[in-house]
Image (tube, rainbow, N blue to C red; front, side, top):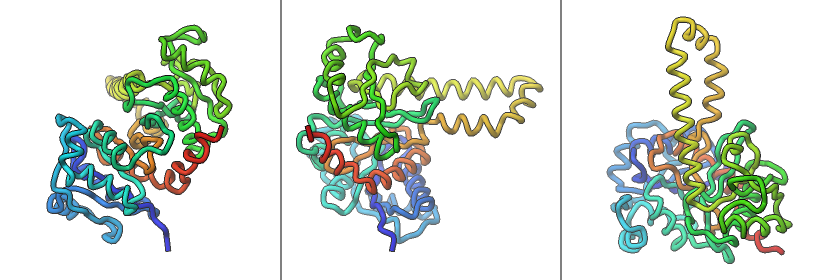
Length: 335
């Protein structure tokens, strides 16, 4: 009998919920035998959407959660007051052990607050960061933090580097991953106060393969495997990355359709170009895991369509099978 990873999914989270969330959940279980999904949300609404799809009914269940937390609500108050919201119910399933992971495209603030209050931090972890994979010329890199801690301290960034290294080695399979800190130049003396304080700590950290500073223009080249920064910088990099990627794809497509000869060339180049563009699409890599928690919580973009929801769910299988939380607990404070 297959031992499946159980993923609780916030059916009401995101701009296109529940349509795209349910569709993504169905695609995930149809594609991957190693998981089952628990959808949280108003049961009648979720089941009505599920009825539009074909899927193995024993691998998707629904847990009623009549309340929904919106983006304009104060996160702490919403988590405390809306105990029957799709976010709180999903996080409690993970806390109780009824699910191995929780995925949401809903309110970022509510997910971050709820994850820490309900799932809880690993003992000793100061600030759990959001850590998405981003495509590069040579494969993927992990940017950490991309949105959870805008006022991070140097000690936080050191923990981010350690957790990011553990993730890249055990989930992505990169041995001795290269760690760099985002800076405005390669010289050690450059940067703001946070970077200047963090740089020597990373340099003298025996647990990571620190290669120094990385400038933003080097990130798409794959110059580092783990890219360390505080959340304000990380979020700006991530959003620019996504926006530029979308714009470039649109410009390339428009250019190829501009003349008869360009259309002919596009027809010949289509197979290779399609693969290249697919590999550089951030949706392929799913959401951002929140590292340093007792349980796996993955935050997907608010505008996620079914493909990103599906990939966010599927990535939980490897995270769970590799026992990343256990490895972080074992290795983060060993020295």
